[in-house]
Length: 299
Image (tube, rainbow, N blue to C red; front, side):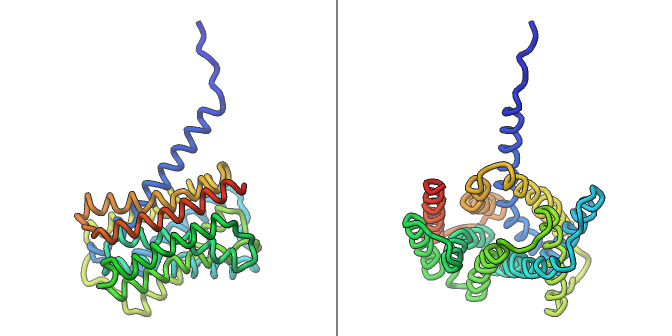
């Protein structure tokens, strides 16, 4: 008796699940990776952020050019530079700076507010926002206020500022880039990483960052993990999801990553969170879920 024919839906479903797991778990674990890299003595901007994005962007750029993907045009590079500054220097670089003072889990909770800022910036640009989305924005920002006023962040003013700037930068850059003249999605990611990485390296050098001695094995492994898995594997999976599933499903990482980050921080780095920290996270994620459901109903 012959085996039943294999349908195309099964492997596609499997690929979707695999890509989601990569985005959920790997991106959720990057906060712990940053914590371990800092603990290993790695400079925050020039190495943990800058060098890894330059390497990841260079590898992806070379691979795409080898496969015949056109390079960004002269007119597209300035747009990629602005995106690199907003998303990577402000969005990622400020998270790394914040994690010098705050836990990896708390940093992930603050970054979970990105969809709230994106919804608000979309409204400012004239995009119609449904009542349910406004409700989600209000709920989410209540959580942001709670996090900034009633959690352990209040003991670290510098970390608080960095974690306010990071989601603002990421959201502003994401909304600003919509409708711009850009290369293919993967080439956009490569160009953005090259530009943002270069900005981060220069910023780190201007800050006077330097290694105090030979890099520790923990620091090298952590930066390697962030480069290969965080900046290449997971980002590639995310771009693939954007082209193969509904955007709402692809962006669901926003409320899964903080849970992964908090769990890994507590398990591996022995981080502890107050009731206010957990409560603020729950309210922020509730706001993101409300926005997501409102968009699903409108779609």
